Image (cartoon, rainbow, N blue to C red; front, side, top):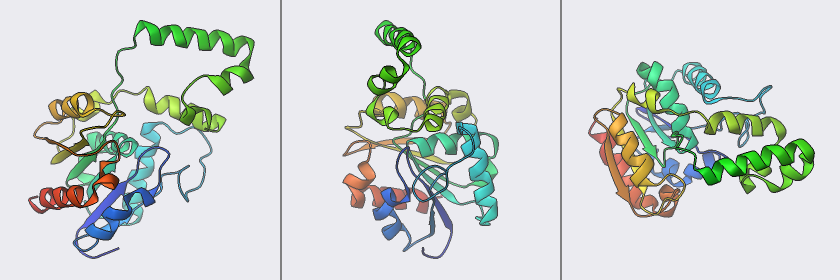
Length: 228
C-alpha cells in the first residue's frame, strides 16, 4: 500500500502481517509499504524442511529481489528482527534503514535449574515420548507441528551477537518498557552495544508496543526514517 520509498515489515514468530495493521494504515501515507507472511506463517505455504534463521534470511533476500524492492527500509518485530539481522549482517546493501522492535536473537546463559529441566525432559522423552511432548516446553512450543518444533529449536538456539556486530545500516531499537519476552534492559541494551551507531529508545507497552500504543510508536518510526 502507498507510494514512495519502499518499507518492508517483518512480523514476529507465530504472528502474521496483520499484526502490523496500525503501521500499514499509517505508514502507507508516506511510504510504499510491503507486509509479508514468512513461510509457515499467516497465509504462506509450509516449507519442505525445518527452516533455520539462515534459511529464512535466504528466503527474504529472494523475496526482496523478486519484488524489486530497491533498498527498502525494514521494520522488524521479534523473530522478524532475527531474520533481518542475519540477512543484513551479510548483505546490508539489500536494505536502507533498520527499525527493530522487541528484537530477539540472544542466547542467554543457561541456569542450573534450566539444565535440570532439560535433562529431565530428555529422560522422559526417551521413556514416554508422547507424555513428554504434551507436558514439557512452552504452550507455544507444544502446539507446533513436529517440523516446526525442529525449526523453532534451530531459531531460538542461534545467538546473533556476531551477526549484529556486522550491521552497518542505520538502526533504531524501539522496545516496550514492560516487555517480558525481550526485556529492553537485556536485549535492547545489548543490541544497542553490538550494532554500531544504533539508537535505543524505550517506550510505553510490552512486547507488542506497536499494537498497544500505535500512535506513539508510528510517530517515532516516522521521525527516525524521515531523518535518514
